[in-house]
Length: 234
Ligand SMILES: Nc1ncnc2c1ncn2[C@@H]1O[C@H](COP(=O)(O)OP(=O)(O)OP(=O)(O)O)[C@@H](O)[C@H]1O
Ligand SMILES: [Mg+2]
Image 1 (cartoon, rainbow, N blue to C red):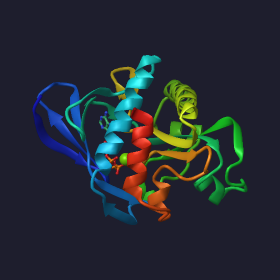
Image 2 (cartoon, rainbow, N blue to C red):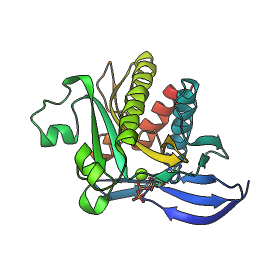
Image 3 (cartoon, rainbow, N blue to C red):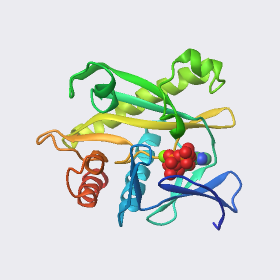
Image 4 (cartoon, rainbow, N blue to C red):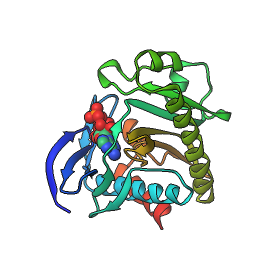
């Protein structure tokens, strides 16, 4: 497979056309950003840890019948994926209160949310990803009611699989974000499932095992990403 024209360079990943119709290459760069890009750095090896964990989870979910964009890895940082028409939603599943939920609502950090909460934000950094509801999503024409129902169902399925898998490793899945896209009439999970998109707490020590280490200067980001990816992928 040949990598062709750069289609899009996001904050942390680059998307390339390929010589295979319907397939793209996503390169996980070593960039890391937080607070809508307000904080940014380049950390050696960060890209490959996120690529490895994403590939691991996409393959894991496929085994349970979840449709993802994952095709294969080309090398440590480059993933071949199905070319999707991305839906500009950030679909967040929360099992425990943390992050913006605690900042914006009277939840105490760490409160268990039973059943889990699905929150959908509009993927638009210039507007700071405002929270949507079904009516706004419909009025903006972002997704049909049937697509939205499907997206929420898949998000909760992914949550059950990830919660169960991570619990075995003594890791709490606090929350995570998914992006979805259309491939023909089918909805696929796209983008990434990594330490940048999940909030993970060590069950025993309570320590952060994800991008919060970077956001809030809690320690050595790369050492954490390295340890977590070893724990998940081996
Ligand atoms: N299978 C796919 N097909 C097409 N585009 C995809 C696919 N998976 C992810 N993308 C898109 O690729 C980009 C990944 O880059 P990155 O995560 O760095 O971007 P971002 O900073 O989150 O956002 P932005 O889209 O605003 O640039 C995102 O725009 C994402 O929606
Ligand atoms: Mg992104």
